[in-house]
Length: 481
Image (cartoon, rainbow, N blue to C red; front, side, top):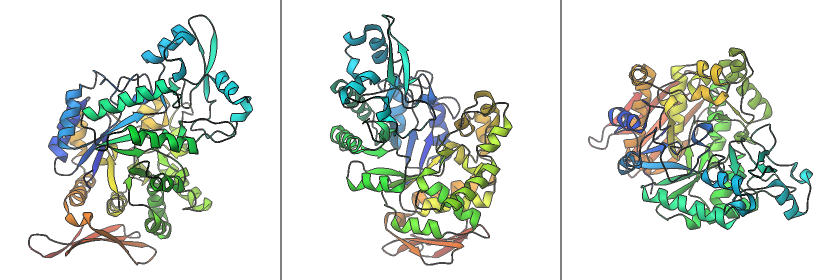
């Protein structure tokens, strides 16, 4: 069972260059503040900062070794990624297929478009309705060793070749990945891009019934001691559906980040309160991740006008359009989310940032804090102007001197204090109550036996007051965070 404490999200090389740097950072600054660590892909990879893995059986030597991974797993709940939709084109599996063609043992592991069309007796138009994360075609033409060319399914980029997850050879490989990760002490596996796994003509090919069945199979072959987390960017109804089917233990609350931004910008928590009253508790809460700030995730929870006004405000503070203006080229920006650090999205307003984190920490679920957000990082425009990839504004690599400087910021000190309270106060394992309050405020309470803590948040003044019963002295304390 996962600890009900704050978790850190971090790249294997984003803090002092490697996994040893991550461990050092945690040991010095976060030892009593977190209960888990999500280490983003540390496997050998050819693209997308780790999300085009060659395998899940190795650690990229540039980051460290399995010993580094196991060391963190012995002290904290370890969260890792399993890229279930695709593998790198540089992987031994795909390279063998390119060399040997239909004679390859891995032939059935990949989706040849023409074979798929023949399988279902359809033409290309049958896949016109697919839900796309990119504005490009879902396939890439590859040249084989014999000189022939084939179109193969690539949902994301030409570096990420899709699996045929219904093929036995693919499933055998996935099981080997899961078992190996289990041996490293992993507590939670994040199913990356799982919604795109199964393709069917005349459907969106996104989280269709066959994909839900595949997720159910993943649950069956994963050891019980490991929880599963589905990474799905879509309307909140899909998250609820996954939990209701009991295929995974956790989903992401990707609706929360934009709802909080809207509440702060409009000084109105009506939509946010509605979501808090209907949302499932089995959620990993985030404000920022290695991707962007989700927009499609608030479908039905905010009106089109509210979404437009909130996203316009965020973009004015540094998201998407501001990024375009900062560089010589337009850059590659996401189509369903905003590329921006959360601190920048709030206009680098310290009080607003603490309000946002207080809401995240008091809402039911396990909160995760992305390393850039932990350090109150702003958009890295220098990297964006170099790579032209929007997501890179929120993926800064911190040197140790940059880390020590960031930790001196008063807003970071306030955040760390809030994290410590969330990870240590016992009432968060009790019962949650959303207390009636004015539209421009939020009052959230946790109670376990006689112990309680209550956050009172004013969206106009951007104040966070927390009241709690001290376990040892039985004194009632009240403090502004």
